[in-house]
Amino acid sequence: MSLKVERYIPAVVALAVMGLWWLCDAHLPNGEKEFLAAALSVGAIFTGFIATAQAILMALPTDSVMGRLRSSNYISDLIDYISSALRSGILFCISCLAGFYFVESSTATKFWFGLWWCFWGVYTLLTFHRVTNIMMKIMRIP
Image (tube, rainbow, N blue to C red; front, top):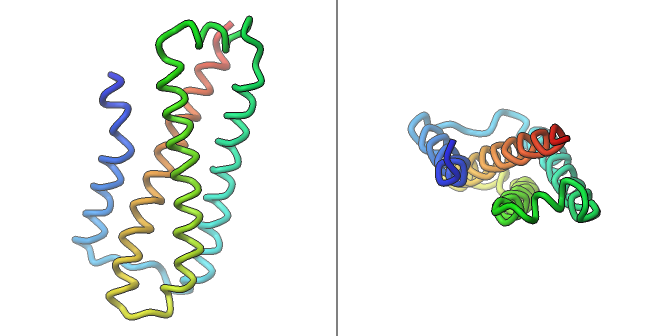
């Protein structure tokens, strides 16, 4: 897969799923507060994993795999991917927290919040998936 395609897949797929959410007139499931609490936990786990992966990569000595990554042209892409996964995880968690205030709102507000939540949830999941795949490839380097 080319880097251009890989770079934009999370945003494009998240927008497509958000469009499906709109077309299907989807809503958060009943028991919104419990659902948002569970989603917040998952988002926090994803964010913690990404932050830990970032810390581990930063701590690697330059004469190891990290040195080879730095000498390649891919280190800036890896840094961008990790930072987008970290930011999206934080925004997803913030969205879940904000949702506690919106679940008591009007139906229209809940619908617009659902679109927002859906986008950040899918985007976070896909950026996490992308970084996890890259980390697994790095671990396979002898």
